[in-house]
Image (cartoon, rainbow, N blue to C red; front, side, top):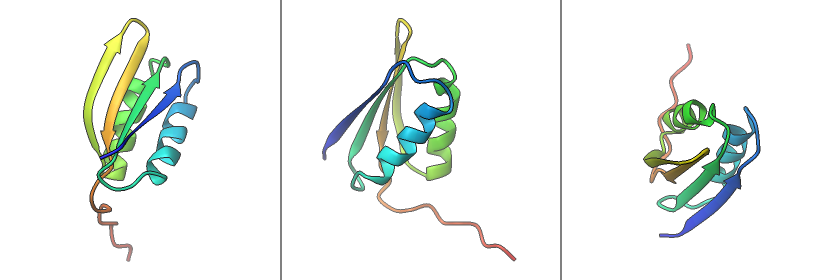
Amino acid sequence: MKTTKLDLSGLKCPLPALKTRKALSSIERGDRLEVHCTDPLSAIDIPNLINETGDCLESTDRAGNSIVFLITKASASPAKPKRF
């Protein structure tokens, strides 16, 4: 299992969520992504993104004005809803 660190400090919404999505698409299943953000809205946006992607938000830690997310890439892609 490999952990990739992503420093998004100083970026404002929606960039932290967009860059996290892109980084998740580039790592292998089962690997981890450690995301560092300073935008307070990322505390809402990143968990919502993870809910959409089906990956696993292992932890969210706050230290001062920094938020650190530890995300594990899902071992399988979430099922897409059928469209009629």
